[in-house]
Image 1 (cartoon, rainbow, N blue to C red):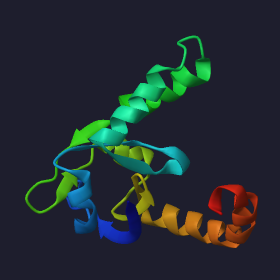
Image 2 (image 1 turned 180 degrees about the vertical axis):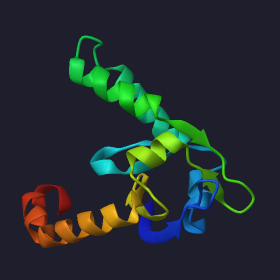
Image 3 (image 1 turned 120 degrees about the vertical axis):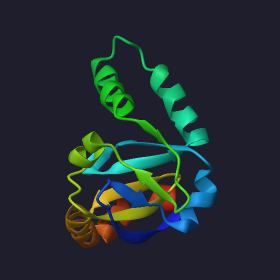
Length: 143
C-alpha cells in the first residue's frame, strides 16, 4: 500500500526522485499518466493491467469512455528509475499537471500521485475543510 507525502523538485532534465519507500513496491518498471484533478498518477504494472482491461471493456460506442481512454492512455509512459531512483517525466505530462519545479508525491493506497506543489497545497487546504463531511457521506465504505 502506498501512503505518505513527500516533497521533491524536478531537476534541470525533468527528472523526479521517486521516494525510496515507494520504489520497492513499484518494481523495476511502472506506468505514469495524466490523472484527475490536475495531477499525474503512477501505477504498478499489475495495477495498470487491471485498469486497461477495465477500459477495454467499455463499449466503443460510449463517447465518454472513448474520450477518457484516449487522454488517459495516450499520455501514459512506462518508466524505469535510474540508479538514483529518478524518473524522467515527459514535457506533456509536466505541462498537464502544471509542474514548474516543486512537486509533491503522495501515496493513495493502490497508486501514487504527483502534484504541482502549489496545486496540491490548495487542493489539500480545500479538502481539509470538508474532510469530516466527506467522512460522513462515506460511512458505509469506511466502517
